[in-house]
Each structure stands twice: as structure tokens, then as C-alpha cells.
Image (tube, rainbow, N blue to C red; front, side, top):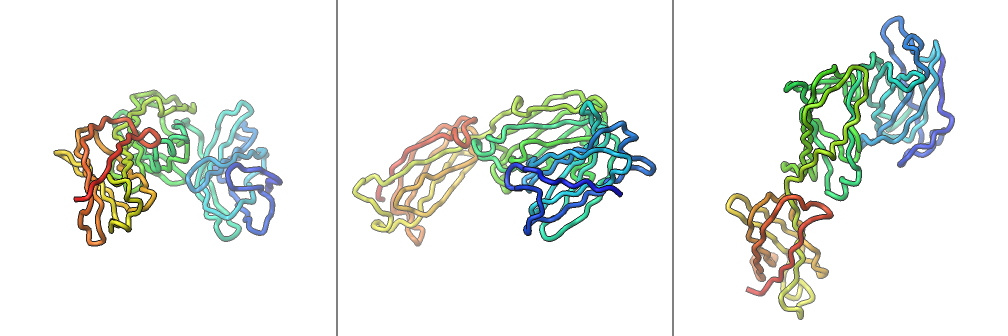
Length: 329
């Protein structure tokens, strides 16, 4: 058995160097081909190992030479949980075989087996990582259909149905591999938090063709539709002589958007710097805005109102703004 060691690999993000530091551990990846096969049988030149961090964001790529006896790859990493892929490539950078999995390297040296299968092609969904901050998105859910039927494939070493499949926005890409040729379509929804039930952005990808053995990149930003808007409420007391919440016994500020079909209420502590109040994921419509300054007993001591028409498309850094003053009741 021949081992290939990474002597020095500079990783992006927080991984540091793959040398043997006291807080590093060794991951050993055991390559498992079908009985009687090895990498040379595929006329391949190298293994390409890609590591992904806990957000499933690509963190490092390293290559290893394919020989008749190469069946184990070893590397030093900082302690963490990792996702990984192993691609066997020829001299033209074509993928010939592929495997993936996860590995817990949080405490000590560890080994993991990866089953390599013939590469059949796939799709790589890409999006702008800046959207995560710009549009305040944490979670993306993927649904992939093949001529109307839900698709299942191997994701990180497990057979997985791609129906509302959850992925961190910060992953920046999602590889769906080893799926048969055919006509596919996709619906991708982006959410502000993992607890959100309203999709901020929907990417509806119309039918497209996948060809056997070909990697097909797909930029989902070409299919983006913003479904809601956010509202930033800048507020203050009507009397500028009031400079402190405590001097008027206001402990909480509550903002309510009210329409015939929906009421959204957000409360926050009353601070002397009068922090803006954010209301997220607002559907299109006409709303009454009610802003109240509440006492510790939740009695409304101050109040202000406004009428607002919300159109979709203004989220995150592009949020709508409204200024309002509250008067003593």
C-alpha cells in the first residue's frame, strides 16, 4: 500500500497549513474501486481531493498522482468536521471516477473509506456569495426534477432525494453529480434563517438538458425573483427634549405592520440611541404601521402611525426605510 502525504498545502479560509501541528489531525482517505480496478484502468493521471468547511463552502483543492498502487491518501488538517470529494481525472482534466463523503476530524486522527464510481456527469449550481450578506440569506433549499420526477443521487456519500435539500448560502456552489442524461428543471428558495417559512428569493430554472459525462455549470442568479421586501423603521420621540427611554418609563418599542391579510409585529428593547427596527419578509401590499413605546407592564405610553405601500424587491442592503415619531398618549 502506497501513501501519498501532503507536505505543505496552504488552504484558504481558516484551515492553515497541512503540516503536523499539535492541534492538527491526520485524515486518511481509503480509495475503494470496484473489485479488480485501480485508477490506471481509467487512463487517469491524478486524484483531485476537494475539502469543504462546515458551511459546505469549498476550502481547499489538492492533487495526488495516480499509480498502479495508489489506494490511500493522507493529509493533516485542523480539527473539524469536513465534507470532501475525490475526483479521478485524466490528462485533459476530464473526470473518470468520483466519490464523496464526510469525516469527523474533531478529536483525533481518523480514517474514512470512499467508494469510487464511474463518473456520469452532473450540474454545478453557482450563486454570488455576496448575496448572503447583501440580501440577508442564511439557507438555500434545492428541488431538482427530471421530467417532473424528483431526483435522487449520492450527496456526501449518502443517497439523497433532492427535494427541499438544505444548504448554507455561504457554500457558494452545489455539485449534483452522477445523474443520468435527460431534461431537468430546478426550483431553489432562499431563506433569511433556518426558522424562516417565507422564501425571500426564488430561482426558477426552466428545463435544461444534461449530457452523459459532461459537467454543466449553471448560474442561478440568472433566474432570480425577489418575493418580499424588508422595512427599516427609523424612530424617535416626537419631543426632542426626550433623550432617554428611562425618563419616560418606556422599556420596549413595538412595531406592527397591519393589512387585511397579515399582521407582523417586532419588539425590541428601548435603547437611548434609538436603534432602528427591522421587519423582514413583507409581502406586497398596503399596510398600516403602528409604533408603540411600552412600559414594563406593556402599557402603551407613546404611539405613532403611518400608512405604507410595500412593493417586492427591496431586501437586505436595499431595504425600504420609514421614519416615524411617537407621541405621548
